[in-house]
Amino acid sequence: MAAYVFFPPLHLATAINEEVIDTETKIQTVLESKFQDWIDAKVIMADAAFIPTLAFLGVVDSIMLELAYGNDEKRLNDKLNASWTVFWRGISQL
Image (cartoon, rainbow, N blue to C red; front, side, top):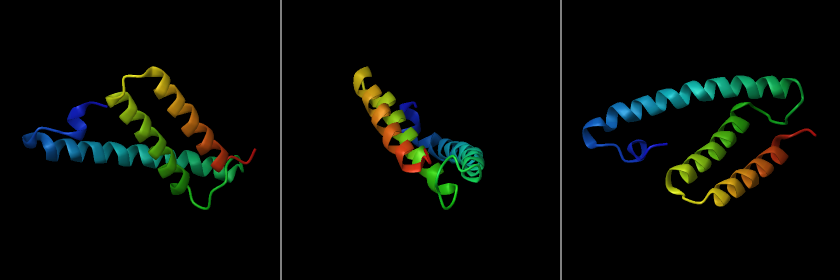
């Protein structure tokens, strides 16, 4: 994720924010559909698909920040593995 998304030039801020929100809304819709499929198939636990969707997006946001601002591949991999482990334990039926 580029710095322009976090700190866009003032004259582009509105357009970039609208594009980011539109993209996130589309991604969230697709993810909610997939999570609902997995809930229905009893692969994961959740009362509503938006809960694991938003939690997953939180994991993704964390990794994107690490990619944008971090310079340590080991830290990135450690963060990804830890985040995924906790996330999956929290929703998995296995």
